Amino acid sequence: MTPHNKFDRALQSLPLVAILRGLTPAEATGVGAALTNARWQLIEVPLNSPHPLQSIATLATQHPQALVGAGTVLRAGQVREVHAAGGQLIVSPNFNAEVVREAARLGLVCLPGVMTATEAFAALDAGASGLKLFPGEMITPAVVKALRAVLPQGTRVFPVGGISLANMAAYRAAGADGFGIGSALYKPGMTAVQVGAGAAEFAAGYAGIMRA
Image: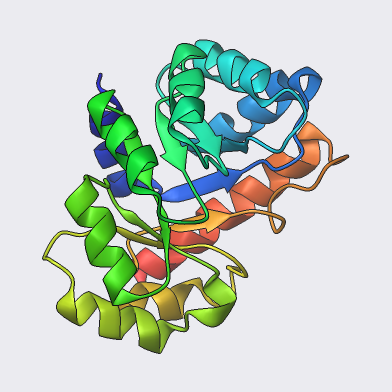
């Protein structure tokens, strides 16, 4: 299954990206199992975590059905490193055309961070698979709705930053396709059991939104 096939499948089932900033390689096995047991299929280890490529390699090997990759990817060289470690997802806090083009060249799913329509269209022109709307605290559901009105049909948008069970419904109604969940799901030092409980709560909350 290609990275883009995995991405499409996750969008249909549970389009939530687990952002595991601070995860250590020793925690990767337990936390990965906790997430996939709760049906999460999108897993991101930011590159400013301890030995992130080791964690990505472990997660990608142990959960081949999931789309595993890196966040805070700032340079094209890092895209190649993530790819070599088995990562298939590239997420950035910003839009860097070289990063997006390298990810596209390697067949990876790439979600660059954007805030404005100008950045959004430039990212899509470079080959982005979707858009990370960041920081979410500055991009309200009303802004998402306004962007959705001008973006090409089918553009995937993921608000990231400050997303919680309390505000997901409003963003979804405004046109969000999915969400990145960071500290509300995982903080350094949390046990796999704690992460699993939070993951199950988010999964149930999202399912409730879709049923409403």
